[in-house]
Image 1 (spheres, rainbow, N blue to C red):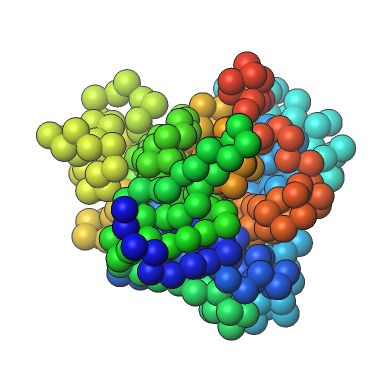
Image 2: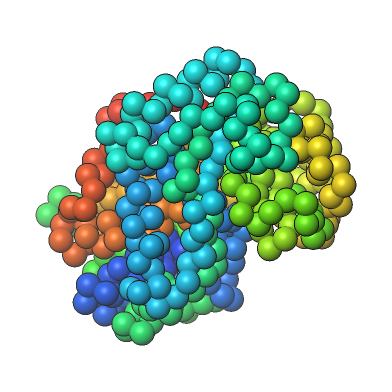
Length: 406
């Protein structure tokens, strides 16, 4: 048995933005014995550092809309409360549909958005593109929607702000520490984690938070917990500096095939979920020959497909050169219904899950950190009703079944 080297009230596994947010929200509530463990040499080396920084309020499920609105409230107060700049800029999200049926499905979400607290979504006709994004070729566009509350943030700035504030409040962050197991005891008919086994020794803990992103399923299995979270690879093409598209251009999303783009620091980020495509130009899901679902090497065979879409939709991009060394791939942490899994793990009440955000973890991190801190310190989340995100919903046969549209 490993010798206990230290103790903590709460051990958070994963030094990305969700882990940092949980640490801050626990510490600001007075929980000082908080320890974040990160296996990389510095925080944010996993999915947070490879995120594109989109923030959106439009979703096809009420719980995701409410998470975004809570997160936005916190982003607006971030400088005053945390003492840092999150980089939040409400430049908007512009969703465009080419097929009339897809446009009808998109606009059918409007009556749902208003009761969820989001009345600001406006319908967009093809001629509105002159105002919202004049670079988009209007031919073939049936219409879309635009939400001015959506926009962008800086993932690593958000993480750094939370981590620094958490440290000021007494929380600790340890890097180059890998979690290799958990000590689990049976108490009164219930399993409880009593310690975290790491590459540097054993850490006694009252409770554990799994904030390991795409690796969350691997971490959960160390405690004999089956967590349905798996990695999904996404690639990003980065142009050389390109002045023809403005920095405040809204994130522009073409719903028919998922191609979308934004401008960041004078360069254009081109994105396309090629894994869902059967086109030969899409390339393999994983880099050739790797067989590793956690492999984040960039596969250049994907580029022709994304460039064809970029040049067809925004003709000016034919003049933008790709900065191949700057292109990257990152990992989403996917759950079976594409929604977060939040709360105590079934059968292990002090092992808390903050996983499976399915591409929305960065934008929802401010909200998820607060809500998980409420669960740990108060016994339940009270700012929002998180019942839809309960970890038991899959075993109960009640996954969230919103339209797979946004």
